[in-house]
Image 1 (cartoon, rainbow, N blue to C red):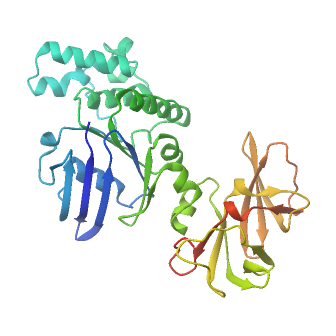
Image 2: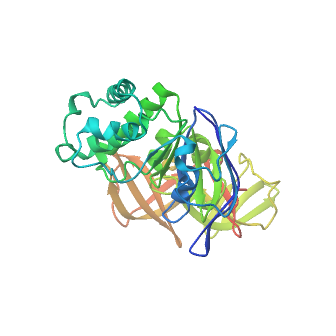
Image 3: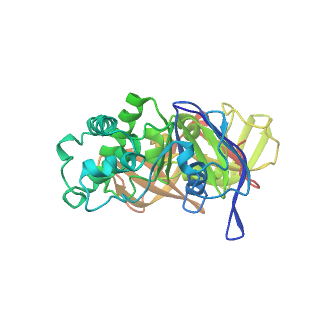
Length: 358
C-alpha cells in the first residue's frame, strides 16, 4: 500500500477557490474519512488526489512520488464513485474484469483477481448476473470490487453508500470495515454522514469551506472538538450551545449566562487560562445531560422524540433550546419543568468571536 501527502493544495473551479492552502498526511494502511457538509470541498479534494481535476497549486505525493500532474492511470489508485456506473450489458464478472482486460492483462491473472475480489465481497454466487438482476447493495459491492481488482496502492471512495437505504448502509459499513482489516489497504473515504465517519475511520478530517477544521481519531474529534463548527456538525442530536461569559471569582472559575451559572473547576481550557469577562459559548452533548430531580439546572419540555432505545427531550432554557438523551422508559410531559445536571469534564467551551476551543 502507500501513504498520501498533500502539500499547500489549491483548487480553483469556475474562478472560485474551492480548496486553499490545504495540507494533509495519510499514513500507509490508514482509513481516513473526509467528513463535511455539501460544498465543503471533500469530493474536490478526493478527485484532485485521483487526478480527475487539475490543481491550481501545491503538490500531491503517493508513496513518496510526486503525482501532482500524473494521469489517473499512472497514480495506480482504485476509485469508487457515488453512482454504481456499471455496464448494464455485462455480467458481474465482466464488470469486474473489464478494466483489467482493457489494459491487456493475461487472462489467467484477470481470472485470479476477479475470483479474489468476488470472494472478499461475497459476490461469487452473482458472477453470472447482469446489474439489473442485482440489489442496490450488490451493485455497490460490484463497484467496490471493480476498484479492488486493480490491486491499487490507494483506494478512494466518494460517498459510495449514500444511494442505499439505512439497513443496506449499515450492512455495507460493516463489510467495508472488515475489508479494510483484511486488506490493510490505504483508504480515503468521503462522506457527509457522521455515523459512517465515526464507525469506519482510523482518523477523521472535518472540512468546512475548503479547509480542514480538525484532524484526529473519531474519539478525539467527538470528545474534544477543535471549534464550534466541528462541535455542531458531529453528533445527533447536535451539541447544545448557550452564550455567556467566563468569570474568575473567589469561588473559582465559572461560566455565566442569564439564569445559568456553571462552575468550571474541573474544565481544562485550551489556548491559555480563561480570562474574566471573556465572551464564551458553552457546549454540552445531549447524551452528557443527566435528567435528575437533584439537578442544578432546569428547563421546560417543548418536544419529545421517541428514538426506540432512547428518547430525546427538548428543553427551553431562556432563549436556548437544548436536547437531552434519556432512556426509553423516561416519562416527561410537554410544558413540564425538568431538572438536569452535567459535568465540566464532558463540556466544551468556545470563543464567541471565532468559535475556537477554549
